[in-house]
Image (cartoon, rainbow, N blue to C red; front, side, top):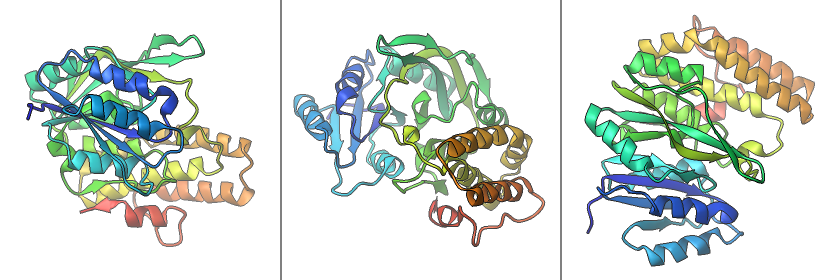
Length: 319
């Protein structure tokens, strides 16, 4: 059995049109220390499963296909893959994106050299029929402690909410308590997870070098579906973060959370504009405004019973 330094986790759901590109980019890595790719696929009707089995058969020492009979959703599928990962570190890729050839080697050298908990890289944004690409502008080289990393995360600049910009020590990913948004209807699950993971990290490395290709011309993800509950879903995720910090007694994270509530409000307002465009009701708008008032008042316990995010808070914590 070959040595595994990094386990790559790829959630897959109806990605047949882009899946070969993602798989080929992983197999083309120049990483010599050894890696595995765990593909966690929800039941699909577009041929994604057949493509994965083809690649698994051709590369049995590298590719593992995890295929439950029922749909689990991105977050829970990803968690099951993490739990079976053999590597010391875990990286993530979406089935509609791709890795630069040196992605794993650059990330691995950085995290080992600095003995860090996580390393975060920059990325390319690829869009249009001609796949034009540009480098996401907010990037820098830095070594951050927990407080500085959370500040950067809540600014949503150099540290974005995406899982796929980060190589984590597996120990951090499996530590408890943790947050998993395990419904197929959930949104912003990466933001919920990363906010709580970064609160457990003492040392975070930022790399200005872009190592990941994020394809914006793909419209199959849950986030691109027309819906009228984005703002409330986003408030629910912020409520998860606040509740997690309060239950774990993390005063550093709570202070950072409070400091950047203005930035969170920008996100909620943006989502509410989309909800309005898609025809949300006046009652829904009133609920969003009340939920935001509850969320930002850290002097009082967050109301949960009877709120739109009650079900989310009751199911997403794992002790």
